[in-house]
Image (cartoon, rainbow, N blue to C red):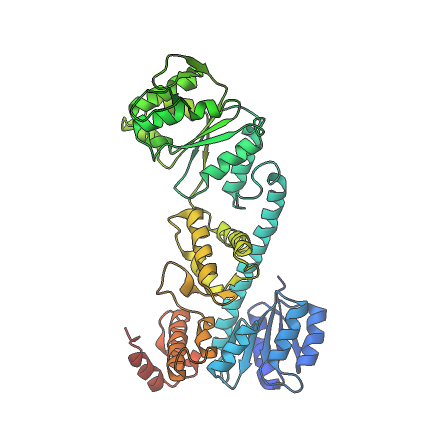
Length: 463
């Protein structure tokens, strides 16, 4: 992103003051005295950030904002105005402004705004770089692995991709570990799809949902009359996976007795059905997964050491999402496109504040929770921009100006209620931006101290 800042301001004194501040901050600065001139300068200098007055000779600052976004869509624009109304602020942000600044303002207030905008631009640039990197990685793995379902550009994910590439063409047993929702089954499917057995079945067994007797029948099959309810012969998952891959999910949940029977199959590649005497030989690749620390389970005598070493020939650990936060925007974008297409909402997006909340959230349910959160938001939203209130967590998070949708929905809420709601939001945001400094927050909002403290008490924000 360019470090050039374009200033569009017809007041020479104010313009020169802003130039001085920005140059001290290390920016290259371009200036214009009208929106028309600003557009010409923008085409030439390609600034990454613009500071534009709302009222200008000729076309307005809002019109400049809309026009400059056409040929520099990534530019962030700060609107300055002496008309500090809520309606104007909402209109500016709806049309693409990053923020607005009410005149008169101090140069320190301007500096704080620019620092926040710069941080946002850097973060956006980082996300764009990761997205490009992710696209390159996905081009290499999509066709041979999993049609792009594994999402991640973090270094640890790149290492997982390399491991998949190395082990896919072998029959080596793989043990995938990671918390619930991290994508263990996707990795298993990617390994199978890229291997020599891709034209043979991938059979999955969730070991955590069946008791010992049912799991034994599920894995090895049973003969007719083997137990009450066994009215016919049934093949087990090992037979069904013959020639292909058997994915044993949540392997850490099986009993010690079942572990012994499984160990025999892994060692000898043969078994008998429940209630039968015939021995069946199978050619099956094993991929196991667990959300437990199996080394610790071995120490606690809850998992057989010999079975652990049979399974753990090539370990693949998928880290929780909180340890690779740089992948969160990629996952959100992926699920927006995937689920949005299914729901007939292909062009929907999250607001900047919603994305910030998602970036900071700890995601205990990992990738699966991200997918569920995106689907929920897409189902419930009535607007193409999705705001933090629709996220299924942190309901007390600060709301962005976009939450003021109530202002343009006549009949849903009384006008004074809408004004009060937005006023409270803006005061909360000012306090957040100033880290609780009430005097600075009052200056940011253009309020006298006594007025500001009155409003704090009114909205019970004084503590």
